[in-house]
Length: 160
Picture 1 (cartoon, rainbow, N blue to C red):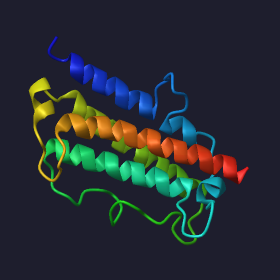
Picture 2: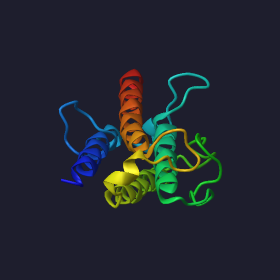
Picture 3: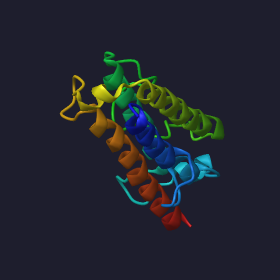
Picture 4: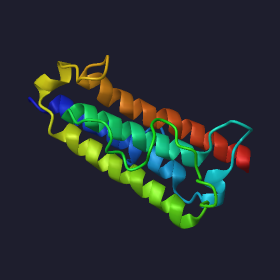
């Protein structure tokens, strides 16, 4: 079955992002019901908040997709890279929070679509701009989602 490994990788990124899994909460569920005020709360000075973790996760989904497709940098909708201060000054609104959640969902969909069209042979190739092969990028983005899901869950506990 030539596409079996691709199917497994898709299942991994789906479970880490928005599908039910044995490990419990996925990234999408971790932010479900979180308000803009809660998302902006910081557990300490200089610490990231839930909102920043969401946009950071979106950025790395964009980066993986870009590397898989061989695209040039510069098409992420926000200026900068990796970490984006959130909320923007004076913009801690529900609308701004929902816009950034939508960014996360859309970048996940586009990254997933790039994985879905991979050939098994491409899994062993190393996309330009990374030290990892394609398989490693896909496994890594699933692990990245789960890592930040754990952080979000801890921040929510600290907040309450």
